[in-house]
Amino acid sequence: MITERVYEALFILDSDAYGRNQEGVSGQIAANIELLGGEVLVNRVWEERRLAYPIKGQRRGTYWLTYFKIDTAKIKELNRLFQISDSILRFIFVRIPPKLVDPILEHARSGGVVRTTEIADSDAEPQTANVLPAMEG
Image (cartoon, rainbow, N blue to C red):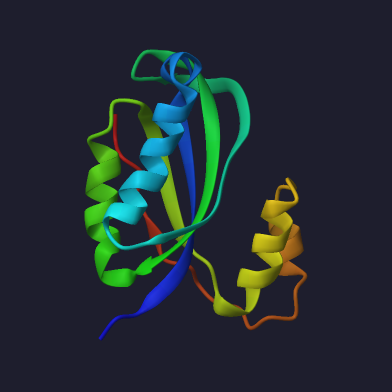
């Protein structure tokens, strides 16, 4: 039985690697999702900023936001693919509750950033999202 869900993924990319090869580094995210039969819904840079502490020797990171749909059975393998990437410093996946998918995707496509208060104020049933641990490093 195939169960597809929509996920939000936030990546912290190595800013040096991203600066040298923007298409290659960001394209790797979509390529890995599509390799496992997923569909990328939104895939864009969010911002670059100074990190609170160095990660893999890097003091700056480029934050990349991706929304995608994939079979839940493939998440573990997708997690592994991103863990072995040199250009990805950290990442996290969050399952989006079905009632919130359309408004969140619309907001993400417009270039806005969804704040937790916007989600908390919605009239959707409270749900706990599945959060996979980010890679250690």
